[in-house]
Length: 301
Image 1: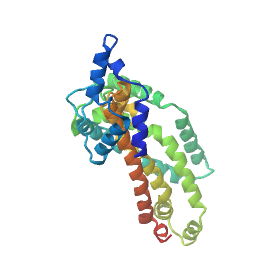
Image 2: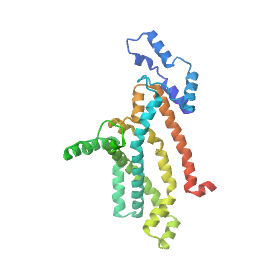
Image 3: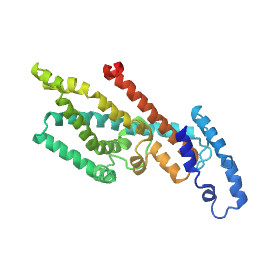
């Protein structure tokens, strides 16, 4: 409720109607437009109306910039596209980063560990935008010239799973590469801490194999921080990656939200922000539930 109120008040600091109507609009035209959009009603009436729409999942409000299209239609159109981008990226990033983190922790202090840490720090030091520009140039333009035909698209999206690789694979790979540096450092620190625990020493003394120690004992006991890391990024799956969607012309939720902010489209901003806040709250609750599933000691406490 507080988030909905804050978003509504921040959007109404400045009246958007004069900018929408243009310099030639009269005072009467502006007043009529404000009445049409419902901005002439008292703030508390607007707030409770918006709150009722959020509680009842009533997304039938029309977009200010696209009359005839509702917010619900925009959601149904944009959310699946964002998920096609973010779900594969999250899965690949998590699996690869956890594996590299375990290998780096196992080889701690040795040459392999230093090489992996070096590339992780290097990956963290480069801007997201640089990855996008280089990815589009080498992954699409140069690769397309090399094979004689376009391999990856750098703008637009056409629905259909058969088109996924052409439109989505390159931004997914860029997202994975960008996230690898941060996640690898985090999971390495987690795994290094686990290697100092008594149960690892006991497993070694019993003659357990390296693979069993790493992928059974160590991984299972490191699930709490891994779950925390994943659940923090879970709300971002729906909003997508704003930069990737904008630069690749992917009509996902992040691109829709950015366009709504640029055009002062209040219904889209209010609904999308409220959904994001709700997802964040749900992810926190789900994190506690998963703690109890993977670690019975949490349930006992």
